[in-house]
Length: 213
Image 1 (tube, rainbow, N blue to C red):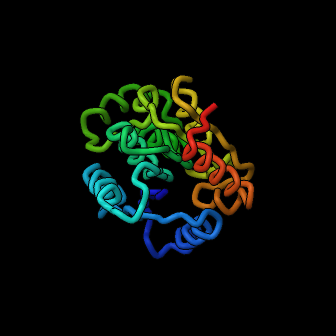
Image 2 (cartoon, rainbow, N blue to C red):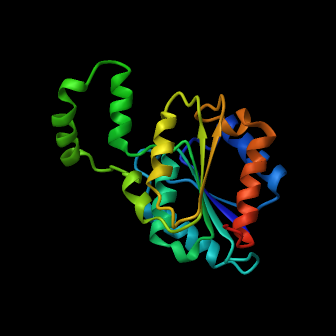
Image 3 (cartoon, rainbow, N blue to C red):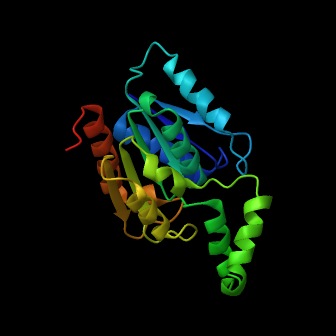
């Protein structure tokens, strides 16, 4: 099997390199790293191209492709799972937000109280923003088995966003939720310790062998 990992952070980040090392050490899985040219405006075409590249390989089992996305990468991964569900075995989301607009108000609330002007501001943003990434709207239509990994002490994306995404997925779609106590936004895989990789590997293994009961 292969995991397509949607990466939207700097490739030279120490935490990122460490997470890739751990994924290989704990799971021994080949990885395709998808790094869009822009972190602010990730391309859906990049995601499709990466999946097509993997499916064109002859040295892997293309029926066992999983896609992983953290933060904004989770929005891209969710879209890919909805666009090409028949080509993916599973989806793993970590510390992903419900939408860009929701995150805008999360960040704004840390500087001011936007309650009085939130509704008109949301209306304005709807027309002027070019990249909404409303992951919450995709969840009810999701059909790919999905693991939600949430750092419960995420300092950037509130953990409630991951719970909201999980709850929005219909029960007809296999889903798991794993909350990491003390997990921060970029270091949940470290904060979770070996248990993190046990859950990660367990999900991939179960889905790969078709065990979704």
